[in-house]
Length: 325
Image (cartoon, rainbow, N blue to C red; front, side, top):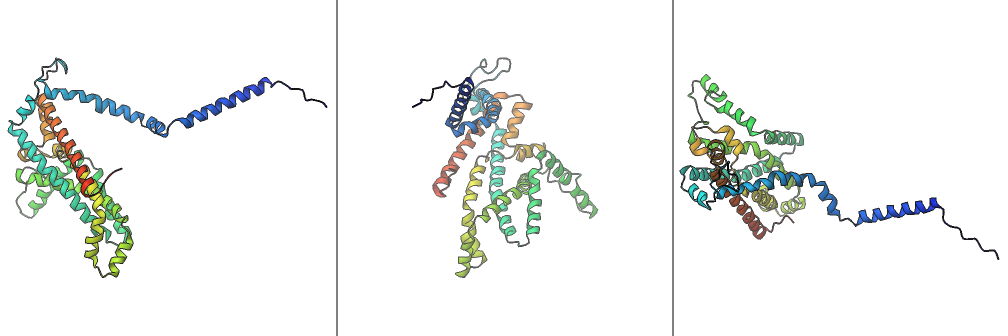
């Protein structure tokens, strides 16, 4: 019986086996990494941006509790505790700005829910798809126009020498000045904001309408329900989760009446009813260089907005059984 002679593995085979083992180890290591690690790595530039431009500047919050002096810096300025907040409540302009902010913002929140939902319900009844999509596109376009441009367009249309007064002059009518009338300027702010944003809200509600089960309407029709009854008992309840979501998101902006809109449209003649917290903070910090007071006003607004967001979500979870998770 002839035994096979044992041979040593060649150097080439050894290197190949070693290379394959290393590749296998790399594959195992790659598989062992949790899935979230790769996604987090993709988000790393966003994390860096957030840290540099959102987290680091929060150090400036200390100015709200200081008599800030730029020459002494954040850590050299004297501390005054809550004196800046107490002083704000004694300034008539601050109280006026807070009241104007609440009136304008709450009006926008309410109407930016009612108007888009009503328009979506009406548009959903149209059977001609080309016409429906055309209208949907047209009303959605103003959402993409910045208030820098839109504010100038509105001023040129409704200003003292605007297009509206020119047309009225052709018919011998007197000029109207909604841009310089304090009693009507808040309505102008709310109306133009609704005109700009209701197309976006309508798209959201139209998407929500497509998620309602059509068999519910068929069952209602069999039971003899008319169009209004179907809308009241099926469509509107089906839109409740979307309404809750949009309302919860909007609650955080109750003290944000739209700085870019107001700043590009208001003037000294309407400042009594148009001045909001954001424009007031801008004037305090940038124009009057009162950094401590402007920081205190901004911090007050941020804290109240945070409380409103948490409260609205808690109410939505309790009464509407709504959760994002």
